[in-house]
Length: 424
Image (tube, rainbow, N blue to C red; front, side):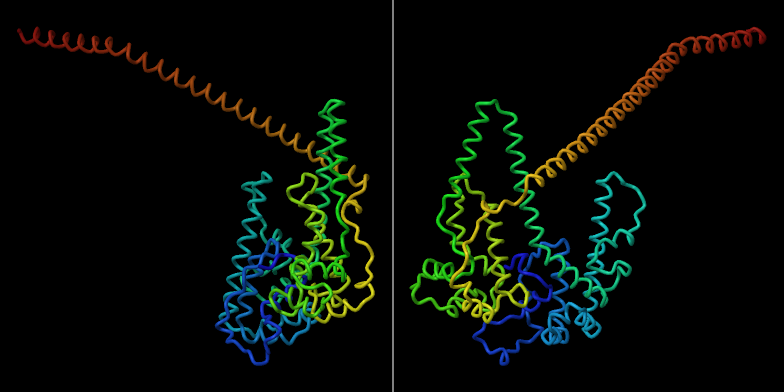
């Protein structure tokens, strides 16, 4: 399965869906479009990932669009020329795309409502059109049908978001490292002097142990690839051949190294530095190191910047001087992710967030106390009404015998008077 960093351009994905092994003559292979299976589920990491994949799935089923895709270069795709071909796809595909868009709009409206409820704005009138404007991957002014502008927006948004994916990963890792250091310092504050000294000594010892590792080969260099050739492929390093190496590690046989295939080549180097069973080694740092290695090789070898390394690009790179005589590779411990000033700003930000959280917590506590006070008043009023009702009932109960006596006496007197008047 492809990972999220596989994509630079949304159309790179479409191209890869269609890729066939290099040994196959593509001119002689023409599988019926209608029989194509949907591509394997791909998680791009984008919040509109499912919508993106479903749109791709259905556009791939249209013969006209598929043909235009293969005859359009990347620059034209980025400029929106391919999106205009949407007007020529089949009615069935357009109908399905309309349905997908309506589902996506409903999903976004639900997200807006949930966010509104979380912010304490429950019950307020929502201007969905205005709020949908923040989502740039579709035309919010027309929430019912999927048009050329929708495809154009989807391509541009996915392109931009995926190109920034690695940058966001670096930022996430930087925050992770600063959080880790902040928590370490806060923990030290809770210790007495002797315990703090022992903790600091242990910390320095772990840093030294982590830095004590074999030499790291420069990613993408002859030495690094030969080590993979010898240890992973069990081949004679003296018989190293770039073309054979490429074919061995182009695992899907499409004639390109994608980002995951490249990252797999660095596993041997990373194992020299990181061991999940060692206290001093952080596996989050290992993944950041892997990302750095892959980015470096891509910058050096991927000349057309499509985030794929073609066979020709790879062979060309192996003929350069840098491949044969590379500089040394500096690992993460030699390249701090943040400065002291950045750490200070980060800690100040955390302090502000904690202060805001405490204020919010106090407000909620006050609201709770006020609700409890009002509930107490309601309970007291209820008790008072119940007591009044019981008193009225009791009063009514005591008055009943007297009323009965008076009524009986009145009846008896009238009866006696009647008998007297009639001579009885």
